[in-house]
Length: 280
Ligand code: KIV
Image (cartoon, rainbow, N blue to C red; front, side, top):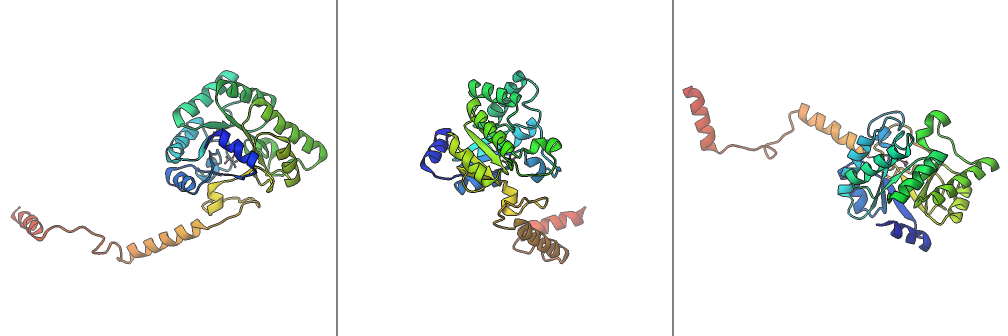
């Protein structure tokens, strides 16, 4: 998949399917299933590392996970999240950091959260440098210390106008696509219609050009907070938990490993070992 393919899908009214992934088996499953875009999100701070939010994720960790995911992705377009404080310090640092992500991880693009003046400047600089950028507005988890608990964005006329302006600014700064997180569906529809680039919704209703979810939320592999918009299609924690409980019982009960699951020495070799042991 390329950016042109993603744009062609918007033009054709074909939904763009996106999902996060963080490791090789997960990314292989996601890619084989035909997902168009894989995001190595800084949500890994929560669903993989067990932190309360995404703020502790480092550039090195994003590069590490993205390199693994990019190796598994044969078809999907791979985007790496730029972690908190990796694009806010200076223009020079932003280009260096995003450059490292692309060169060292094999990602095809980066994602930056927010639409503050500095972020728009960073997006424009990266786009002009040849690093494609995905934008992200609405609820932006890296601003958790500013906004607090997850709340839907753009619920009043003024706030909706701000959000519409932010989405347009991201497009004008060069974003090839914009994630809309927890935006009322009617507003997401208006923004989607007004942008030339595809919108990817998460908790923002069906009118977006595509949808994204966190892999662990979709398959029930994360036991922390699950937002209302998540549709859990399987409960792998239950399935895996059941298998592990069974394994514990089998080992404790002496039922694992069985004869067939063990390797045996040829009789003559065994005899010789035993004899040499007795011989001292
Ligand atoms: O970090 C992440 O996984 C994300 C998606 C939820 C959009 O930003």
